[in-house]
Image 1 (cartoon, one colour):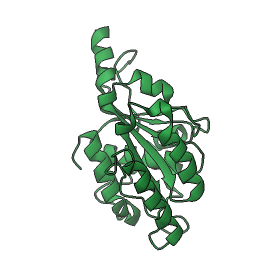
Image 2 (cartoon, rainbow, N blue to C red):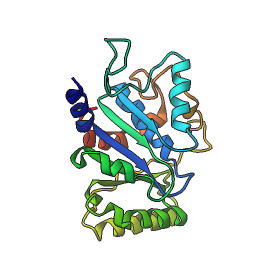
Image 3 (tube, rainbow, N blue to C red):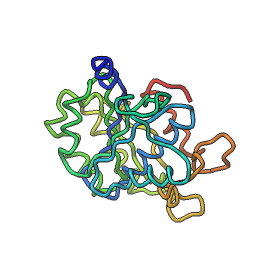
Image 4 (tube, one colour):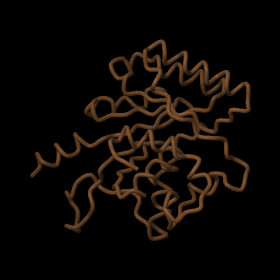
Length: 231
């Protein structure tokens, strides 16, 4: 029984959302992806190791409103034999260089996906360039994908840094490892500001008229393909 549980955890697909600084939208992106998975019937295990605990607060707020968004990895110690078990694990790491190391070491590389989140701006690009070139990622760089958050293609500065990002990954032959960027939405009536407050409804539910959810279609489709599930 114990061996089965260990095997189950080892083979589960794990997504590490990470960056080397705060304010990049790492937690927002990780929780959005979790809600997308939940909307198609997948069960997610959310691990929040960021000191701010924003992802865990989102989990707790949703639960308080009657919606479970995070599930256990095994039935061990569960009092409910009908408890659903997670299909995919999402880890929200601290915005500190090297914070991801424990997860690199304990996860099966073939089932590990590293999502580096950042805005297309000088400060974010510099820290994520350092992160991407970090020697600790040697041997794992083919598992790294970039997700640009709050992107505006009408901004020449943002387009400039997006091109720099393409050049960075092309130096490692990983040019296809840039996900479709998430559009700038802060400050308008369809922004993301309320998402992390929690809700009793899924952000991506089929009956939702959420314009932002539709904007995220390509990004979520690509993340789901990495997870090996269909939207």
